[in-house]
Image 1 (spheres, one colour):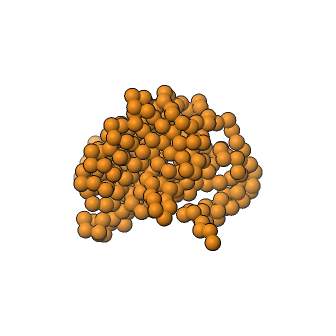
Image 2 (spheres, rainbow, N blue to C red; image 1 turned 90 degrees about the vertical axis):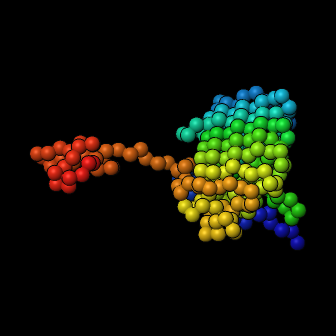
Image 3 (tube, helix red, strand yellow; image 1 turned 180 degrees about the horizontal axis):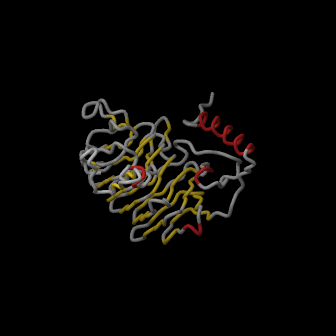
Length: 290
């Protein structure tokens, strides 16, 4: 008897809903031009070549740099990933993030990159971004999701630091098959700030070593912070292991769109026909500064 891969049943159900919705809306997904990539890579990936569809595992060699610009979508097939011995430089913007996701994630860009009709991504659809000893990773304003393939004897992570120097800021690490981020080498340095770490099946951050992971000022999916059995047993967010410094943590999702405060929404102006109270002024009615 064969066993369904984790996430396959849920994806089948959601894919059916997606297909029905597409038909009702008169939207028929179809394949657009894509840049197919595999093997050793370097240079700059720009939005003009997006999406980059990974058909075979990628490798950044020592001394080489792969730069990924804002708006670039990287879609990975099952069993593929990215191994870094050089430098990975991912820099999106707050409004136009760079994305690593499943080839089945049609929702991210509206493109059927796998040519199999309307589909959505699921945890474990691809392997991992791996940083080896001596490598460097600088990731900001990115979304990395649906990696972390898991089997009975293995568990990948969306991002695995095996000895590199990795900094992740203002990014979303989500929906991994088991680990969102994992550090496995005591010589590694992993820093995650201002990011959203949510929906990962096992752990948001897991540390196999005693070299502390700096994961402060992040959102874990709940205002109570990440769950840790002794350090934060009341936390209901994504779980963390030992040797992860998660406090202080954010009580809001930095990836969510927050409207810019305005005078109208803050009530800093009042006008009753005879008196106008501007920001910084006072009212004799309340005697308070507004």
